[in-house]
Image: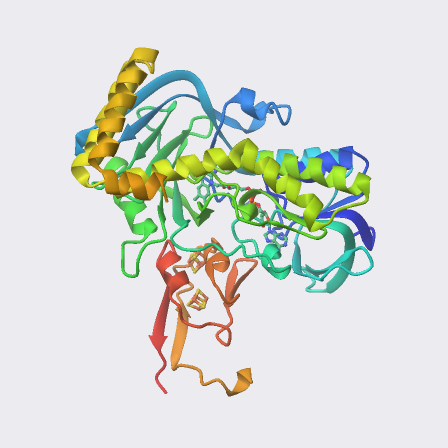
Length: 398
Length: 70
Ligand SMILES: Cc1cc2nc3c(=O)[nH]c(=O)nc-3n(C[C@H](O)[C@H](O)[C@H](O)COP(=O)(O)OP(=O)(O)OC[C@H]3O[C@@H](n4cnc5c(N)ncnc54)[C@H](O)[C@@H]3O)c2cc1C
Ligand code: SF4
Ligand code: SF4
């Protein structure tokens, strides 16, 4: 560390933290980005599927180096043998997360951010004399030091403890946290430009199994995630291996990764005096899909906007920063809550009704999601919802 | 006085051969009894209340709770 005091310290060089740091440095603030891993982005704990080029380019110049696959559709295998196939050019991208995270961190460094890797934050003090003091450990020498900031950003991912150090309730509360595993497999899928999913009572109900092909590298990400299982239920590694052995029996497993995916929807409260959380740490992750790359980036961007406004106004109190929370809520939090309700509705339906749900969905997609096919679909959905009123009430009206 | 609290005769066991250092369990523990150092998961037995949340969470089944043989 070049200095003992900064305007802003960002904890965690994932996409959310790096983007937030980059934006603040570009505005002229002195920013320190602290990352405990020796190499940014490694190991990759991600399925590596994300939104379209156009979506990503709202935040940065897209670099072809990390693009693995241009996705042209999605295949969803539901219960009762009902499969939904959606073909549409440019539905999203597969990326190399290590290269991607490194690219965003590089953007931050180019904007003037000081990046310290192999450096772990171990504690955050209460506000004193207009700053917070961070205890920082050099992971190589184990030396401990302190450094202060006018504002601290916790972008420390699903394993975040930073919010808890400042008294926020950010724990991953079961069952609203997904236990996830990912196998990198030396094989290519028959549908290399599609994301394939298995969901429902006959595969995995409170989550899904995925096959995501990385075409440029010629490998597959096969994984699974579920809302925290009960004691004694099958773990995600065993489930993923079952699918691997069935789908790609002869292929080699190159890597095994796992992790937690916060799927509770945005936290109730994730700002404090001179402190904000963003990305997975704030549970910005999409609670239906578990995708958190784009929403984490958006969270990081909104955080940088409100931090800039606060520092300019000389007010980075909890009260002022709660405007950031409200902004996130309107931009994606509300949408996430709605998707969470749909998720709860589908997983709570008994098998026959769940199969009917997938049939309706399949027919809408078959009709190219045109206005008439949607109208018919929504009417059938209403019938299904009415016929399963208890589940509907629990998911949408509680 | 925390030191006077009687600890249950239990141990949270970590199977290091199974653990893939995903750090997922860290954020689920209500008592900050877990933390990841590099690729080493540390279990602070003195903080653990044996609530089984991390055991349920672990995607590879590396955690279990055992009655200590005293
Ligand atoms: C198995 C799995 C599959 C997934 N698949 C997808 C997918 O296909 N698509 C998608 O969009 N999302 C996916 N996600 C979710 C996605 O990976 C996350 O939402 C995303 O990484 C969140 O970004 P972030 O910047 O908030 O946090 P992270 O990327 O987790 O970055 C946090 C950083 O903070 C660092 N850190 C933590 N604590 C400290 C500390 N004390 N001091 C210093 N540094 C610290 C960490 O080392 C890490 O680098 C998946 C997640 C998992 C577990
Ligand atoms: S059993 Fe409960 S208290 Fe103990 S480490 Fe696991 S989650 Fe924490
Ligand atoms: S959740 Fe399991 S595999 Fe992941 S770090 Fe904890 S013990 Fe290891």
